[in-house]
Image 1 (cartoon, helix red, strand yellow):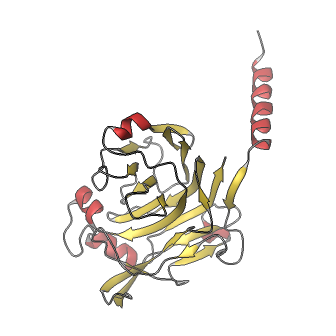
Image 2 (tube, rainbow, N blue to C red):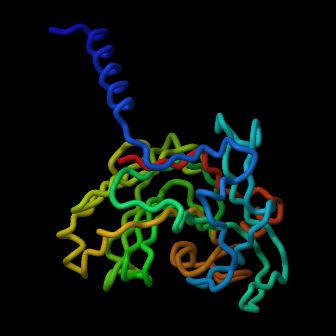
Image 3 (cartoon, rainbow, N blue to C red):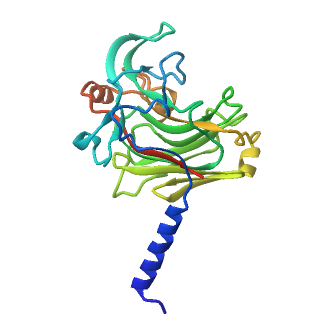
Length: 280
């Protein structure tokens, strides 16, 4: 019988071998002085969906890199998506919002078909803070699919995942909320990931399987559309239809209660991203 020490050493050797053989297709640990725009596009509203209550802007107020203590434990620095109170902000479509926030994507710069897509993220608690790490196809939604790797609407004890496509979008049946262990919550650092295969998905938090979807499951509801490349997205929306269905708040803003508005006004609502990685 092998000793405990021998077993541990064998496990470590195997882990190192796997790490050495890992083929990294994309990596950003936000260790530079500014966002690497060869990898990321910053979105500006524009049309907004889901009755969200913010305008997306390209500003260092809402999107910046943090170092040291402000990175909150991200060793090499962190990307910060930071919603702000900005009354009467007008979008390029002429609509007016009282909040601004950030959304970025990798469209036409980093796109992937299959692989392990992961990010280390922490977020603020506050009802209606709609934080997400996800993927979209390049065609018209939902005909080329959407993969929601992590969604949270400000309730720190769970994180959600979902798939959207033809005939299974919006209130999709392919959705799952995973409740975190009582000793932790979403305001701490966690690695959110999906293993995207030719015939299904394995969603994980900190390496723990939280939801499995097969092609057969998808085709019960509609066409399988997850066989073309998709790009990455990170964003913090505020309020809107999905948070409303969780918290029931209609005032002072749809899906966004006064307590969270006060949190945003105090500049204490944010999403931090330590790194994003895609491996084959």
